[in-house]
Each structure stands twice: as structure tokens, then as C-alpha cells.
Length: 224
Length: 250
Image (spheres, rainbow over the protein chains, first blue to last red):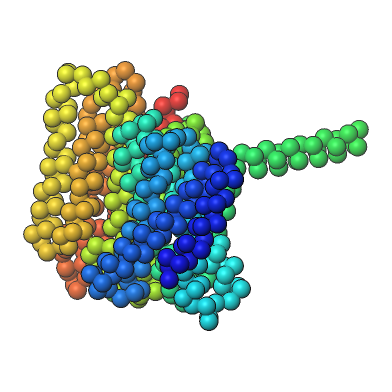
């Protein structure tokens, strides 16, 4: 079933590749690669699930985060090693891989649970899973950008970031399976918003400073 | 006068928090507080303080990569504790042995290794000067101590996979921490200003290894409380390293 879903999504996207150019083509290509990684993760997880004999809930908490994050890191490392190690390009490529992974995962879950899913489920799951996978893969992208600049930092830092991503993914899986699933779904949205705010903190501060300064200048002019 | 006032303010909050944690540990040992709740609370509050303190002072330190890596390490440590909290809430227990939280602890030590080996070592010992060979040799003492503690933990019945997996990055980090503590960094002076931080980190490594040695008393595992003490050290570690890095730019 998952192969049918994969072909249905990837075939039209592959045709898109012929129409796109430059960066847009790269992003769609890595999104397709993310879906391919999801397919590989499905097979590897199924194999190890039968070997380890864990319950479904424990398997998704203890094993799945590690296997999926390692697999998602591979295209990002490939891009950093052979194409470009620039921060902006790496992060967008990493996000594409994560989002591609989430697309196939959500499609598979939708098809296997079509009787119970709702529009609300689709909206929440769509945004939450995409952001979670995107954030985890982008985290590894931060470490991968040092692959040529600082090789020593790359080795230790990337593995450290991989550990962060595995733990975050595991926490997310634990929450969405529990009675606190709403906390799990909000967590990636909250994390993404916080990261966005921190990365644009200077711009936000400048905006408020400019507004405050211009307002006081107008008030001073009026008083004069 | 201002510098003394600033240092007093910096140490006041973690000292008060540490006092609170110690009182909580004593109540937990007496059976009045759940030990899991006590230790997890200590670890989460301590790591949150360390992260916030680091982030607030990050801009004042010209956004150094070294500080960025240490903050990432503390975030990784916090994620591990959050894992335990969520596990406790969802499954109702905090099991012993290897788990995803072990991975986050390994990640924390890998970040420390990044900071020392990846970021600072090439500046301090990048030329591989022959006159510094004796410091490189003496630094092997630190990983040997960690190895002895690992053997003690394994022979006391600790989880083999968890102890071994955690000890390897600790040994690696301890070597570079000890080396940077003793090496004369005459040219740049970076590591000289971080010596108090290195002393705290060496104590941190030893205590973390000790926390893996199972020791039961009064029906409770005492080594579990050592993990709370380790978290307390994390707060002071961040304050001390921030003060050291600020002096890099004076």
C-alpha cells in the first residue's frame, strides 16, 4: 500500500522537476528524497519490529526516532559533502527532506485510518508532523554546514545535534500516543515559532525601537 | 565594586535554587516527597536556568561559537530530562537502564567535546608543539579515572550498555578538558580564563560517573540523588564559563 501511495505522489512531482529550475528543482528533488527515506524507514522499522518484538507504543518511542533521524540525515550530509555547505541552502534542503518524509507518513496514516480521520485531524497532523520532521532534519543541517569549514566541529557537533533530534522526536511520539496528544501536536508549532522569533529577534527589536522612537518624535513635535 | 555586585547577583539565584534542591532531596530521602519528582524537578529547573543564563549573556559575548555550542549542550541535557518527565507522565515510571534519555546525555557530552576538541583545541594546541607533549601525556589521567569509575559501576551491577555508551564521550571530553586546564595558553590566554569552568566540568564528569554506580540505602538508590547534584553543577558551570568568555573580549 505504501508503495502505491509513494508512486501516486512522486510521479507527478517527478514531472514537475522537468519544469523547475535551479533552487526550486533542488528543493522538490530533496522533498522526493525525503519520501524515499520514509519508504526505507518503513521497511527498516518493520524488519526491526519483528526482530525486537516490542509493543507498538514502545517501539515508536525507543527505536523509530533513532532510525528515522539517522536516515533523514543521510541526504543532508550528501548535499553538504558534494553540493554545497552554505547555511541557507542546507537548512532549506534539510527542511524539504523532513517535509517530504512527513507527506508520505501522513498519506500512509490517512489511507490506513480513513474511517476515523477528520478535517481537524488532517490540519493538526499535517502541520505538526511536517514541522517536527522539518525541525529535526534542519537541526542536523546546522551541524553539517561545518563539514569543510571546521571538520573537527562537524564530527562531534553533528552527532550531538542528531542526539537532540532523536530525543525531541521520541518526546513527540510519546506525547501523541498518550492522553496529552494535543500537547504533542502543539509542541512542534511552539518550537518552530520560538526558533523563528529568536532568529529574527534583531529585526523585531529594530521594528519596535523605530516605532517607539518615531512616535515619541511626533509627540515632541506636537508639544513644541 | 560593580563587578563584585554583579558576581553576587549571578551566584545568588543558583545558590538559592541549590539550597531548595538540597532541602527537596532531604525530604525525598525521608520519604515525604517522591524521589522521581524531586530529582527530575531539580534537573529541569537547573538546566532551564543554565540555558536562560547562557542565552541572555550570549549577545554580550559577541555571539561566540563556543558559547553557542555550550547552550546547545544544555538544551540537549534539558531534552533528556523532558523525556523522563513525559515518560513518567505517560507510563507512570522512570525506568533504570538505557533509553532515549541516554542518547541525549551522550549528545550533551558530544557538545562539550565539540566546544573543546572542535572549537578550542586547534587554537590552543593546533601547532602540535613538542614542548606541550608532556601536557598531552599527563592529560590521559582524566580518561583513566573515568575508566576506573566505569569498571566500578559495571562491577556493581549497573546497566552495561548505558554505562559504556555514556562513558565513552565523557572520557573523550575529560581528556580535552583536563588538557586545556593544565596547558599554558601563553599566546592567546583563552583557556587560562576558563580554568574555573574546567575544574567544575571535571567534577561534573566524576559525579556523573558516580551516579551510575548503584548504591542502595534505606530502600532508595543514593546514586539517583547524585544526578540532582550534577544538575546543580550545570548552573554554576554556565555562570563561570560566561564570566570567563566575557573576559576574552576585554
